[in-house]
Amino acid sequence: MRYIVAHTSPDMDAITSVWLIKKFLPGWEDSQVKFVPAGERIGPLPKGQSFAYAIERIGRDEYIQVDTGMGPLDHHQTQSIKVCATTRTFDFIKKDLLAYNPPVNPEKVEALQRMVNYVLQVDHFQEVFRPDALADYNDFSVVNILDGFKLEKPNQDGYYVQFISECLDAILHDFENKIWAEREIRQNGIEFKTKWGKGLGIESINDSVIKLAQLMGYVVVVRRDPRKGYVRIKTKPNQSDTDKGVDLTLVSEKLKKMDPTATWFLHVSKKMLLNGTPKNPKMKPTKLPLSAIIKVLKTI
Image (cartoon, rainbow, N blue to C red; front, top):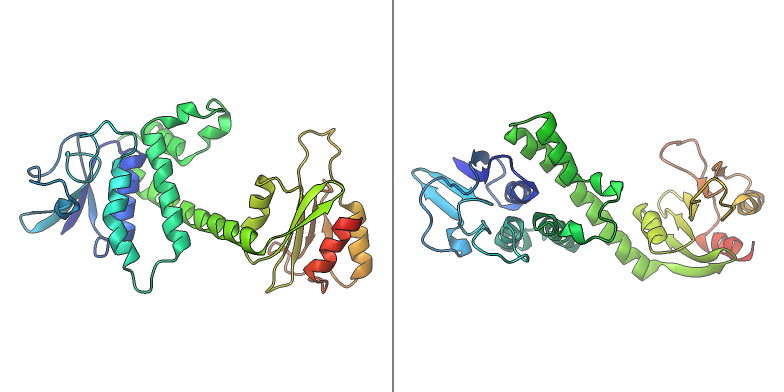
């Protein structure tokens, strides 16, 4: 049997380490997780601290001990804020990750590195240095979900690992999409000027480019799906009910005249103009190319 050992009441550092091993270390997908009091371990301390000693043989079984036990994948031997169990575990599994056949895509490797960096930050309480550390939205995080579960479902260590691991699966996909969107905006994005401010047009099947472009400061973003022909136009949202901002009404009217057979939906906020959506498969995509839509946005 193969076992991963973590400390009781596991934190994000311990759980992410377990998740990395079960998800990316070949042969450890079905390993069982055991828990020991923090600082303790199963079996004697290995003689060395290199990754060669990370897999320990105890009797007929193999063990990997993370975030406890002072072994190669623990970090309580050092005061460095640049090291945690997750960083050590990621370094340990990286050689296998990069050796996959077919190779793991670079977006996934970069996504994993960003997730590891986040866990490192919270494991050393670096969130206290955020300029908005007291903002409530900081509490809508996987870390706070874990803390909440420990209050709602005390002493259910296996449940914490299972649930947060599923969250990490989802976060990994989201990070991959974000990194893919960053690359597409950088390589394929078309910048243009509007009377409201700078705009970005892009042909992409990745809807994450819209949100990311808005976060990057673009006031108007238009995405055309090259497979289905759907078009989404989103603008900077209002900050209050009295905020005027961008109004896409004239854009909507112009595009309807240019392509009356297409289905255009103008949101009540006047900040979002949709032509096709998975939520309504009856909508008909426009025949207009991205360049024609950008021209309307530039000249309206």
